[in-house]
Amino acid sequence: MLDVDKIMKQLCCAVAVLSTLLCIACNREEAPELGTLEFERVTGDSIICRISVTEGIPEDCGFYYSTTENAVKSHRADKIQGVYQSSEIRGAIGALQPMTTYYIAAYAMNNRGRVYSETLSVTTLTRIPAANDNNYPNMGR
Image (cartoon, rainbow, N blue to C red; front, side, top):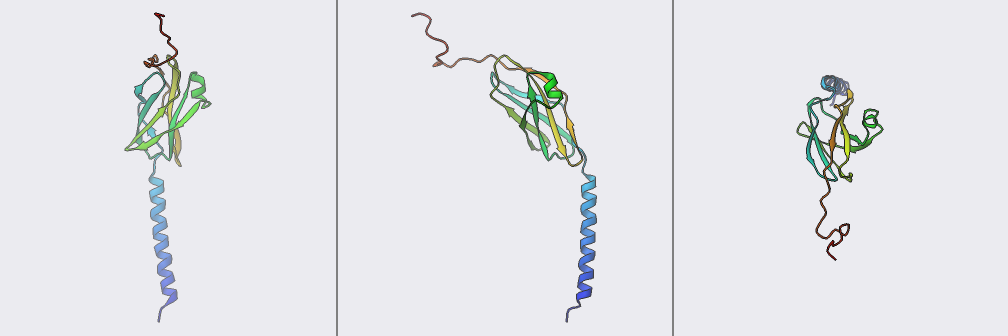
């Protein structure tokens, strides 16, 4: 015959041990820390950004960007979601204007805190027209 009280005591002990282990694991998680923001590729209409994560594991991450530095620093800028993989956050900002300076900052957060990178500026390149671009009519006719 089963001793229900004994089984319940063992189950309670097992739950207590698991809870303690989970608490220890949660408390060991650190707030994210970010490395240096880098621009991997810049074109006339897009910028590919990346930044290393040196501490913690972000639950949410991405990049703020704007044509005014104050908007980025006050977090009123446009925002794209980043992809965290292998201790690095990557993101592609698209639909940008050519020959325009953008200010960009990365962010990362988890339940221990939210951090931001320094704000850097980068200027998109000149747009090169395609061979069939109608914005440049034949000049010789």
